[in-house]
Image (cartoon, rainbow, N blue to C red; front, side, top):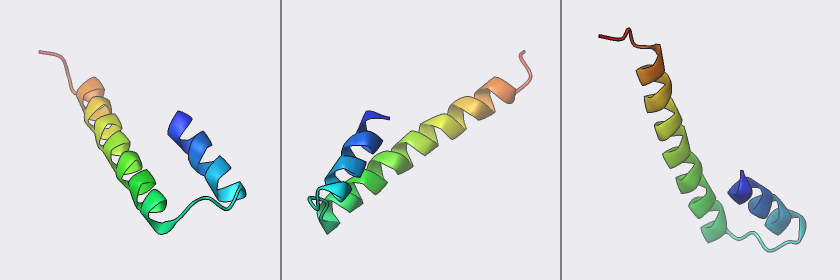
Length: 47
């Protein structure tokens, strides 16, 4: 959430460049992978 806030601030201030955007995408991708894994684990029947 903090990275999203900082990226939005950079965009508003005109400080978001292509490298910054790619870094943001990488962070979002990693976060989504973690969330997906944890969601699947939580939904799996317990043994």
